Image 1 (tube, rainbow, N blue to C red):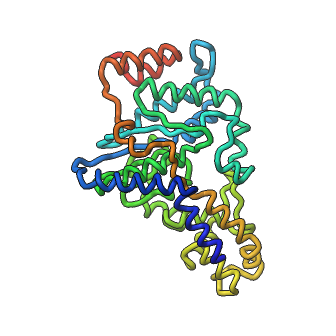
Image 2: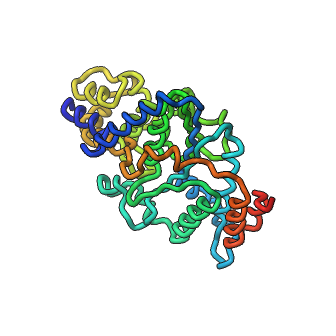
Image 3: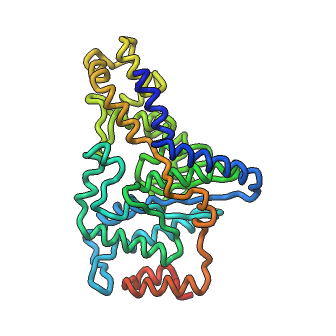
Length: 345
């Protein structure tokens, strides 16, 4: 496992030597900018695909349609959420909506490593992908910057822009809106995660709330998923180890590798962990290490993180913006949304 550990640690940081060079170059530029930064910066990042997915399935009985008689309920709810998020969050300077690969038939990077990963993605009804596209068009109409790349997940884009923002200095903070628990790995003193865009900042997850709910802090969250698995994403865990047992093991031993080494070397694993479970840990150790690599958030080279300051600025709510928003509402027959957002003013 010692050799696996070394490989795992390097894989956590970068996926290629090119990525390492890109990150080093960005870090140097960020340090120079941080020295000049004075005004506080607050970046809000939305996991567009995850938020829209939740609305898509909750709006199946909705009769809301656009001028082409196509269901549009999920888009309506999504846009409403975005406006509520902006209104309820103070001092926003930058705002961006990240999306999974825009092509439903294109494999995500992690699906090449684990064929069963997010297998349900391919099974979503065609109506979802149509509203997926329409929601991105809505973002453009309302001036919210959209980021999406083939085979890339929104999680990794959010990770990349979060790290880019934090590198600019201690006066920068990030709020992430997503129902996806994977992004809890990013929580820190300057990063919070709200499970729903309509949650207040006070309800968002900080490190203390992550530990209260999951039994481990953000820095151990990836290790937790590698041990207990993540059924929602098709990530297998060690058989017989659930969330609570995984958290207990990590609390006692500190890391996934330490747990696996203790199991292999016959060291005490803790109360309630017998020889059967020890055997499972030894038998599935290689799998656990591979799953830890899989769930680690990744740096996206294509994102051009250095440009986020100018690319993710919030829109100016002027007459031009209102005309564009109104045109979109009329195109999609979103009369209710038009009134709610008061775009006629």
